[in-house]
Length: 258
Image 1 (tube, rainbow, N blue to C red):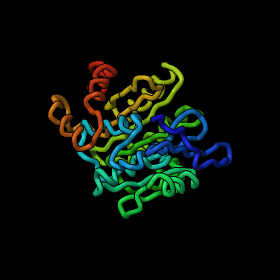
Image 2 (cartoon, rainbow, N blue to C red; image 1 turned 180 degrees about the vertical axis):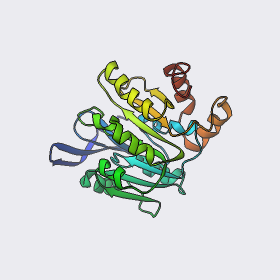
Image 3 (cartoon, helix red, strand yellow; image 1 turned 135 degrees about the horizontal axis):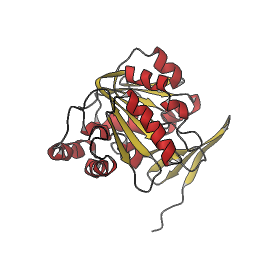
Image 4 (cartoon, rainbow, N blue to C red; image 1 turned 90 degrees about the vertical axis):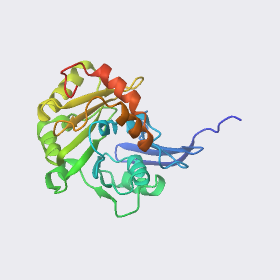
């Protein structure tokens, strides 16, 4: 049987961007008409994260304990919040996005958790980090403008403010989307200065994205990680073995955490 074609179920022009939601079978995803999928969920399996980028951005759990509180920056459809709500319902989280429309769609179309553990915050993250009094074990920063990570994400002031929001053993997961090696090294160097070189890079084959993990303290868990990886893969439903093997390729000795 031939799979049905994607169906456009929402289409709205807002300011300088077009917001679209598609569905094909059990798949539902959000895009801004720029060639990138911003969020994707499997309607039948809320415990899974369909997008490899979303899964890779959780790879810091290889080195730290299960987070108790999470901050999502650039919420999109909130697929990661939905995943945590089903896999680890005791975890608390805050999801910040500058677009009120996107946050509304996360609730309406992407099953953003409607419970006391998760809250949606309509704010500019640059303002939120200045006034926030919470502390987070994991901050996930996934922001792209015209298929690039905005330069301000890696400005020293913003990085310092993010670091200040972390618990002692907290870490930040960045989705780094740049055009070339020079820009990549410029941004990575800024993160390494802020986090005292406690960083790990994770490239994604066939994607332009690189996940950069930055730790507030020396990681709690290091090699050997074999037994830990097996346990985590079972609990999280994520291919941590593949991610760890790619980290070993991406991070030469003495380049950061490794």
